[in-house]
Length: 313
Image 1: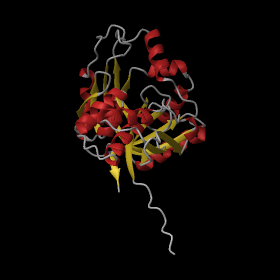
Image 2: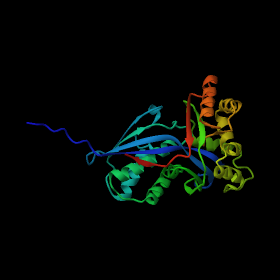
Image 3: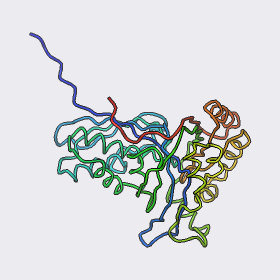
Image 4: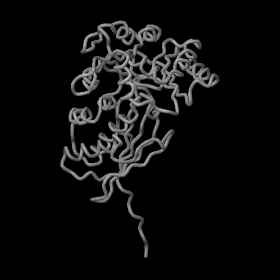
């Protein structure tokens, strides 16, 4: 008698990118506790990969994680990917039953939106696994409710974000930009950085609702594919707050500048530092400088812009 092996459970794999904020302008805190933002995102080719596997009815959600700093990723309802499952299930009226596996490729708690990429990838993966048939617009609406950076991880490429960063307009770019990221083993709390931003005077005399009028040069650099001009135009209102909480990051910035980086910036709320390189070879040289000086716990070379969340074969 022949015993047939059980068929594997259906599963879907989706990859979504991390990001760097080329410009981040922050307004005064509002009554709802949020700061209005005007930002220019670029997706980079460091990816989170989420595998969603069908499980028996009533099994609920489970999460497993591997990759760098996997031990720092929650595997319960506080994980954005778990919340993405619940949000999608509630939207389509199905049970939130799925096993998720997260393969980490974006620094954890580094201001590069790895958790948001997990959530975006989970929305796309469960939509495909459950064959819900939602449009990308529907998924983007769910993404915006999950977090400010989740819609951009769906979209990818380069985009202008307003509101809390979740209202997106694609931006024209030409060519490829080479990035090096200096990640730190110890993360930095986003609420703590915004709190210090407020303590340091917030936006000062700037408008409560920030705009991108000062970023015309940056947008022109993107359209021209000019990394030198882009490097000069990088801007982050949260950088002084991040440096106030983690003064050692100033040395990370200085080492990259001394090694010829076209521009340096704290990525988002930090503590990851981004350096723009002239070429792939120059990116490797910048990475070697950070490593030689002990100015980073891990170093990542990549390029942007990168595609948004997409199904893998």
